[in-house]
Amino acid sequence: MNCIIVDDEPLAREGMELNIQEVKSLKLVGQFGNAISANDFLATNEVDLMFLDIQMPGLNGLDFIRSLPNPPLIILSTAYPEYALESFELDVVDYLVKPIRLQRFVKAVNKAREIYKLHQKEDHTVEQIADEFIYIKSDRKYVRIFFKDIIYIKGLKDYVMIHAGKEKIMTAMNIRTIFSQLPPSIFARVSKSYLININYIDNIQTDLIKLGEFEIPLGKTYKEDFINNYIKKNLIQRK
Image 1 (cartoon, rainbow, N blue to C red):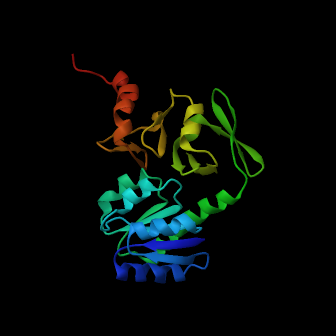
Image 2: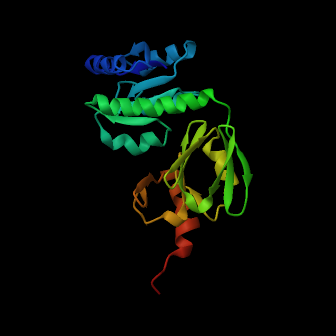
Image 3: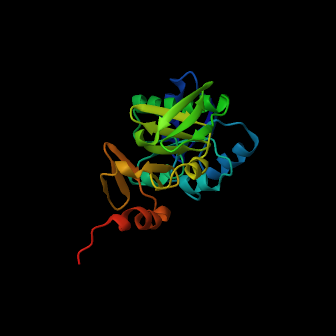
């Protein structure tokens, strides 16, 4: 995969370059100290993956992502863990906190490579919706997934990852499309990147929804509708 580094700190760029050299599937094609220079490069060059810092002078990493009409796969790197929830709403592949260990770096790259490979394959689509299950065409076969088994669905740019029990099934479809075909009595959209099966909800915090072992971000723009449509009508009120 062709990749670039965008970070205003020279030592951070050097450290990221050393990590990239350890992974044979990565080819570093550019390094930039600010988002504007990277933006110019992206306009005229093929980039599959971008390692992007958040805190930079001028245009920061998160605003840079929002400005891109067709961004590459993105792995964020930052010294500030508090940006994690906001960044995942922007469909980034992963979020690395500096200093970055090689093992953690490789794990993030493997995620990106899995998504990249799926982009090279034929599209997978929802083939049929029934009362209790959905069919997904995947790798030349039809996979039946029961609604009751789907815990949550995560959007990854033009793909979605369906987490159903111990299975993870990825299909070429954006999250808006699959949400429009699922029963609203079971599935709720809780952020830009996540759909959840409301039957798995354990508890709801200010900006998190707990589904068993999973913690799903609750986006600000989706919070009010989610509370009104799925929580208030089932809430026991004091008389």
